[in-house]
Image (cartoon, rainbow, N blue to C red; front, side, top):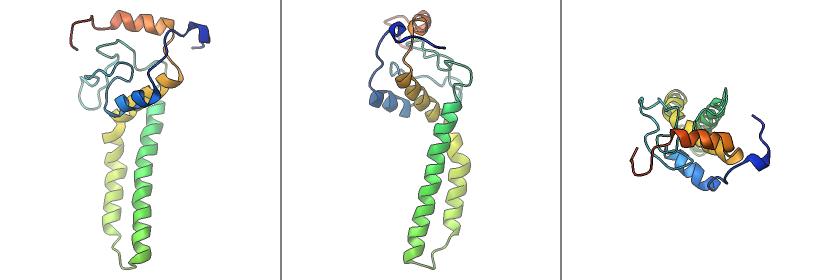
Length: 150
């Protein structure tokens, strides 16, 4: 989907606001709640308020996998560095609590963080590739009318 800069419609909100909304599992574009009507992992196809489509192109959420992987691997790395630091000062430090914590973070972390990764990735993508005119018009067709609370 190659669109010239002149076809861009509006400037997106600042990246900090987009990321803040994404970290709270809200629509990065409008800040609306209710993006997961099908359960914890069930992201809606569109924002219930502004109508923006979340999967903007085929394979869109591969970026969310990368964000999810980076955060979870970062947490495992922090655990490893804490263990190494404790081991340097206290050679008799037990490693079992760190293995257990690493397994919990490595197995549950990706599942628990994935919805956040989806909205954070959408925020990053919106900041790098703002909606073009066609996407803005499409979102307007699916948006909730003013005065209705989604």
